[in-house]
Image 1 (cartoon, rainbow, N blue to C red):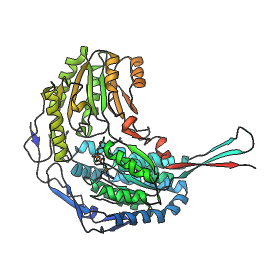
Image 2: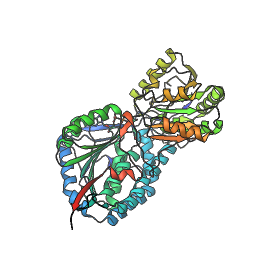
Image 3: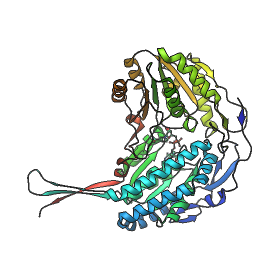
Image 4: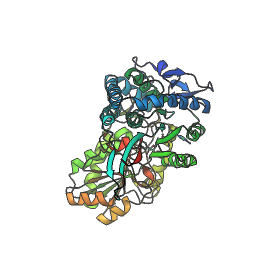
Amino acid sequence: MNIATTTSSIPSNLDLATLSQGLFIDNKWSPSGSGNSITVIDPSTEAVLAHVPDATVADAARAVSAASNAAGGWRDTAPRMRSEILRRCYELMIERSEMLAMLISLENGKALRDARSEVAYAAEFFRWNSEEAVRISGEFGIAPGGANRIVVDYQPIGICVLITPWNFPAAMATRKIAPALAAGCTVILKPASETPLTAYALATLYEDAGVPAGVVNVLTTSNPGPVTAAMLADPRVRKLSFTGSTAVGRQLLGEAAKSVINCSMELGGNAPLIVFDDAQLQTALDGTMIAKMRNAGEACTAANRIYVQAGIYEAFTRGLVERMSALKVGNGVDPATECGPMITPAAVEKIERLVADAVKGGARVLCGGIKPSSKGFFYPPTVLADVPSQAAMAHEEIFGPVAAITKFTTEDEVVANANNTEYGLAAYVFTSDLARGLRMARQIEAGMIALNRGLVSDPAAPFGGVKQSGLGREGGQHGILEFLEAKYIAATF
Ligand code: NAD
């Protein structure tokens, strides 16, 4: 495989020193109490990009205090004003989109075209929630007994701790920050240590958009367990919104339970992608490439198990091999790249383990499958056919550019296989039979179903999972509700 890598890929317009100068608390950059730092690596070249401060429990308490001091003012800011500020965040993100996309590609490794899509998607959460901020309504009714009126007022839930993963460093942050601010909450964001620079670049943007001091605070730490536990134990904190792995989500639910903190959880996935004999072959292949290869497979919604009906199996597999082997692998920031590196060496090792296990169980490698020796954390686009249902990759997130294909015969069989997982985030169905598509949508246990397409994410739609893929929804009209509490007033007048 030919990998087009270079050793240095920092574009001259990126000021990494500004983005790594401190924790962002109260609209000021401040050093961490520990004096220690976290090293940020370019996964395309393995070069050191920057060192960001490593926050302590005491730093986190400072951030909670800043959020607490700002809470009353922000809650009482007129919705129209909050809306205008969010709208300005959207406009500034669009103005700075090329810089932000470069930064994402640099620290995450994703292909620039994927990073550009992420910035557009991430910015849209500001626009959508600027519109939602002025649409928070209440309820008014008569108690069935007739003695009083039932008035329901939606109030901001309070100070929120937001924790985000590295795979969408901008979008996972704005998907939480925008509805939280629209609802009138103040927040502390803890981004992933692998991709902190995007979170700090966004911090400069909030300030420029007019977000008051203390409303959004950002801190990075290599010690997320104790730092988060301390924030959740602080009685001023009322909400945890987490996006990340199911394993960490479970731990955090346990931690939040100690103070009965309201939780939203966007967790891992194991999406089935099902192609029926009657599917349009080109549509199915186009959709599969998006569902599998967006972010080089490092997406919670990535098609993890590809089930193809016997009659279309050969043609589909051949078509997918053609497309996967034609992908250009290279540095994230190279505009020609279609598949960048994985985030860490550990991510590559996990993929190697899963592929070896599947092959041992009888899977056939049709392309890729061998890690290159070049610098950077690369794994090639790979297609495996005849992946057995007991293979580890049918039960764990691959989180990489490996398409795992399994043949099926009947609808009942594929529904049973699709649901044979603890996860339930997204699923993809390709069929020309609309009734069958809707029947599958009803039967598959997932929060989101894509019918004849490879993408579900949309800021205007409720994103989230069932089973161990999560609790709550982000986006659409549901997103802001996660940051509001219904207050009931029984009124006699
Ligand atoms: P992760 O769970 O390892 O980390 C997520 C975040 O949690 C990071 O900021 C990390 O520093 C922090 N963290 C880790 N341990 C912690 C602890 N003990 N206490 C508090 N915080 C802690 O996940 P990741 O590897 O960064 O991201 C990949 C995972 O995220 C995948 O499982 C993917 O499916 C999932 N994901 C889900 C969605 C969704 O919307 N459902 C979106 C993107 C990613």
